[in-house]
Image (cartoon, rainbow, N blue to C red; front, side, top):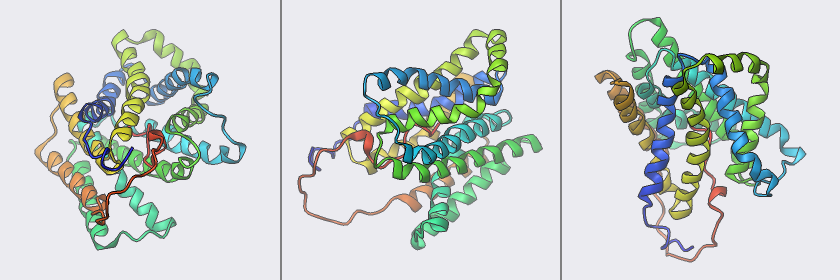
Length: 314
């Protein structure tokens, strides 16, 4: 596929990905009354592994090399276990839309990690965007609701954003060797291992839960992870990575709309303003102006092997 062929915007898969990832925040809110945060995380990862397991037997998912096992395990523990448990725990006192706005600050933490450990130099523009996004995240955290419980929940969600950023840094070298599906499968497999001790209690929660709350948990694995991975891969395959990244800015908007429609939650004006600051800061810090160059044919690439973090976002 040439660069000229990749200039169109695939609106359908982009919109589907944003809605699927955005629906994760609402699904967590629906499930929480009958399920603990750890149980939701365990069931979500177990569902994802079960859906992708046939791909392993059919050869669509390759074997994990022993030399990469430690890094893949670290990716799973941060991007799957820690991220999902912290996010679910935070959403016990923070509404879905607010949580999505806080998670949107994840690229800020990625930038900080790059500066601290990889020697990255974001420049004045990057630092300015970083400051704006952090200001927005703190505004959302402080104004997310009354009482210390809401503030604690908001800080947990920010912790989830930080662990997600850590997982992105760990995943980046793996994407040179493994497809997005392979990272999702093995990351979920490693991520669920620490939670298996909670399996008996989780079974009890399933037995006592209302059916619609169990369906919400299953949707997290089926729709928000497996299906979202497929639509995200379609997006990457139909356009450039920079255009596809616009999906990341649409996720909080989708989450806010779904939260309002299904749960009747609306963020405060201050929280909404803070969320806009987060998105603006992330855009300033991460969007780079491409250098002009003559159009030339490029080799066709596997869309799931693009250097973009996939599958662990929501």
